[in-house]
Image (cartoon, rainbow, N blue to C red; front, top):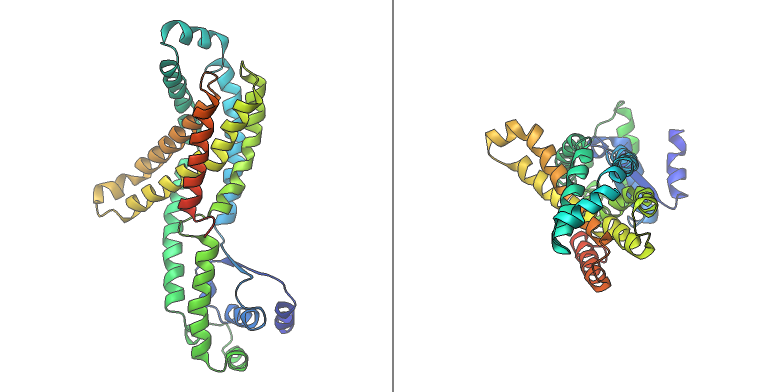
Length: 312
């Protein structure tokens, strides 16, 4: 199998690296990287941190569970006839009712998000360390530092690298330059890239369907705008703010904050998620004019794309 590795890579259209911190320290990983770069360049190399995979799967499952849970609870609270009647009698119209509904949505969403934010907080903390480790590995990469189980393999791998690149130093230079470019192109400037986050959002289609079933005004337009706001804007903005907050907590010199981050972090994350999602729920409010919904939605989507560098 290992003898055919070079031929397999030469015939491959794309190379996906499921990166762990050991990857750029292993000699045979260096060999596969050298072979692929020699015959295909680096444009078709996709660098994916391995811990992103379980995180995406778990968060997608959570979105399904949270949507189901919210849809079970909300008809008896925020979407119930008795609550709507109470709001209409006790709260001034328009902004007063909208504020109360948003508060109720926030409380419900905060409770559901608290079930996963401890895990999400730890994931982001570890991802910060992984991203910095990756950047450091690429900045200081040299094939001579790579390890292998059997040192007799080193002469074979280095001979192939010399055949492909002329010198070991030239290969080192290309890895440092090309792989850093690919890292930035695939992962972007944030801990989690836009496309990876987007994969987790499609579970909200169940949420949109339940909204149509349970809300008093069965208006496709209101529901689709709200769904687009969650998927393409508010959740993405929330994730960006969360990444900034986790970075601040992670790098804080405060010993008190570091000691208590185990509960401060998850509560902060759940609050951010709940607040941004409650904002998206405002798009359901039937008394808001279409322009009051469409214009903010477009602006939020454009801001999101700018932050994540979608078109760069």
